Length: 572
Image (cartoon, rainbow, N blue to C red; front, side):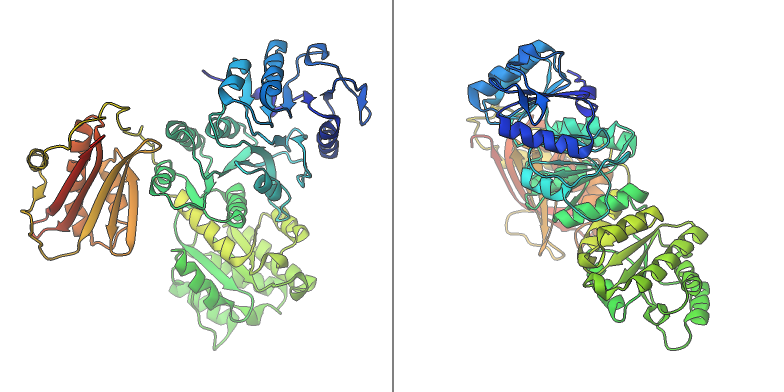
């Protein structure tokens, strides 16, 4: 059923159902954000809350509210949601805890977020439906943040990094009527939203998650997922959806800055200028750990840079141009422009600013002026990075944004964010539906006959070796398991390297997955058909296989050799 999010996203009347003290906190946030429309506290026995007229019940409200924010628990929450639905409210946010099924039944066709929805903030509409303190300012256009953790969402909203945040919402994990994926998909369809950041250890319904991915791909709006866990199925689902993952809140914010200004990086090709002594090697080492590439300068660039920088400067990418930082901005701009004029899709200007007072305003202003002039001359994007976030206070970050430069706070977070934006710039995924295990259909089945399974796989082209045979060549192990949350999770291990994917895989997807292992192109080409044979066998079993293990070694005739087949059926 398609749900209408318009009244939630653009509320003109908000009902607050809870204690007077709680209503007071929400009213303060709405006033601070500049909300000028109707606020209706529903507090029995009170005539007013903070100067705002209060109502005895939801039934006595002057009109159906666009949003009802409910801070009640249990049966009281269910009763309030039902009353909002009868009154014709556009949406209900249930902060308190109550039975999810009872809440959904009470809501009926009305949009419901919760239980455990701690608030929704639209900085575009100046609507801060939130209890605690917030640091957002009204914006006309920006990124959206959806989080499972209220404390994290509040911390992100208080950031002072220059990122324009247009919307923040919090919903606890669980069977809410409106999951994060559906809310995210609706937000992305707003022209004012440029990118989406999700914080979710629990990704929810995988098909809804892939539906979000399809909306994001269709609209050309990137999605970044903040997730600390290492569960292979979740990592594979994020990759299948064409999203990128970061592991720290700081990297999430920095990635969203890049995406807001320029979108995903179309290639893994960066240029960097170190404006502080000794920083170039640090950038090179940390970037290598993130898989980022700095292609060498062209001969024409080297000649031009040699003329500008003089003798004794290593003309490498990243470039140490710290000796030039004291020059007038126009001369520095010429150096910046030369570095930007090669094949890099983004240039980084790095300043060692452990504290704001280590980068005096005069030096910072001169470097920023040179960077802005070079960007205008070359027409390519440029980011300025402070090695530590303390060196890039909000005023500086906002000034850079105003000059169409990307302010990145903290070198480690910036490089993690850049790696995520490179991953987002890959080929379109067009994610196919997942192949899910049978629901109870395989319970009690005996384990498949290994000989019959081997014969079926051999008929599909897989060469199985006799037990005890171990040919030479790199060995990799395949483990495939049924997971009710993600479908069939397959994991390849080769030494210390591991890659994961979800069934079904297209041939090119299988090739891309195996390319993440230390295999030659010839070995990858040999293993792909074998992997697809195993996939065909599992799908033919109609979801009754619970687990499969197999070892592979690329053969000498361009075919993968397999051994150690083990299969377990559901319930076996």
